[in-house]
Amino acid sequence: MSKIQMKNAIAELDGDEMTRVLWEVIKEKLLTPFVDLKVEYFDLGLKSRDDSNDAITYEAAAAIKRLGVGVKCATITSNAARMKEYNLKQLTPSPNGIIRAELDGTVFRKPIIVKNVKPAVKTWEKPFIMGRHAYGDVYKNCEMYVDGPGKAELVFTDANGNETRKTIMEMKGPGILQGMHNLDSSITSFARCCFRYALDEKVDVWFATKDTISKTYDGRFKEIFQQVFDAEFKADFEKAGLTYFYTLIDDAVARVMKSSGGILWACKNYDGDVMSDMVASATGSLSMMTSVLVSPDGNFEYEAAHGTVQRHYYRYLEGEKTSTNPIALIFAWTGALAKRGELDGTPELVDFAKKLEKATLQTIEDGYMTGDIARIASPAAKKVLDSWEYIAEIKARLEKML
Image (cartoon, rainbow, N blue to C red):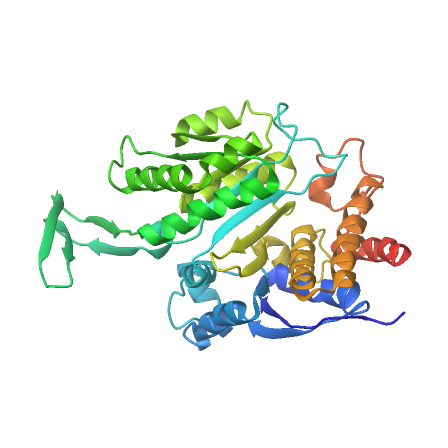
């Protein structure tokens, strides 16, 4: 069988630890035997980012904007322990944070549903689409430790040199400070992306902040969302029989736990980071969640929603073939390939991506799965597989479909 051809390349962003290992296995076993992959490769492994002073990350983001489609492996965001472990020159910022800021995108995450894995929340019947604002807030913050008493101020200097000052705190002793920001333009893009995506998916939109406490910061999010909805989307939502609902974040969490699902839950950056992991875990596993970063000008970056699976990687280095779930990594590739095929008018590439997804889920529904899924599967797994065995089972089913 001849390989499926790609008209244009996608940006491939490699990652770290166990996900980097499985990334290569997925390419070798499930992609390159069937597709003549065209990629522009960027090594976003922690040491590579440190060696380049993060230039490689900005180059990767530029490639996504130029090519229109990217696919990203999971990466490490360094801390003090990682700095020592990898002998880094400095603490490196989140590569996801850099790419999201460069693309000014919204992250949409959706659980991957299989018949033999029931949600932990009994009322959930349909998947939640998690819309995460992927710009600013704590992910683009400025932090400071102060070692003694003093006055902490928030200062803004406008283009004419005029200063506006507000006292944050009269510090009585050592402590910590943090500055955050967001932009009207980015919040507006976020709102538009959410409402458009909801219309495409035919689901209601929920949005929540804590504007009762953060009256200016969160209040601005609430205000812009309502303005965008009223001016641009209200009529289309009414025509489609859909609704937009705003509430406080704590109320939203309480409502979600009793909801049947099937909504787009729009969240600020940190809320979306936390809540999307909660939804993923409650519906199966952090490895059972699709994730795509969508920019306002139509660029797409597909990624795994989970981390680098550090503990499994250490066991792998000791010679163990771990039972690490590769599904989110596979779906990152299928999402990117399907989007590339859609944009380039190559339906055979789209069809391949959909068949690979079907083979991946059919393997689980046939009773063959990794350990994390086996712990919650009903009926019980016929066999618990390591990652290499699971990928081999997927390949066998995929070959029958092609």
